[in-house]
Length: 92
Image (cartoon, rainbow, N blue to C red):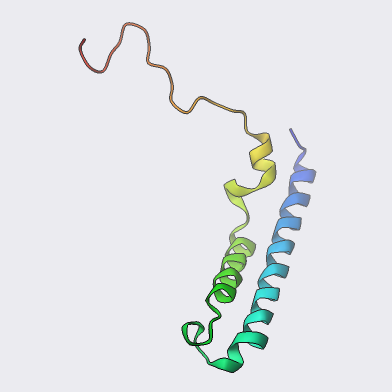
């Protein structure tokens, strides 16, 4: 398992990457799409706006359960626990 210092490093890296990606999508929207019209539905900038706000959300809330270090740290558990022997939910 990784140390808390390493986990904080990954968190800072994820937040920084999300903020940078959000800024690049905002730049793409305002430079490329916004001269065509104000609203994304009229100027074709739906994906730029969607990704911009999605990356802002990740930057504000953090990566959470989607973080790579969380995925690496998890141990695989069975999706459904096997029922106990002798106890059945439906009579046979």
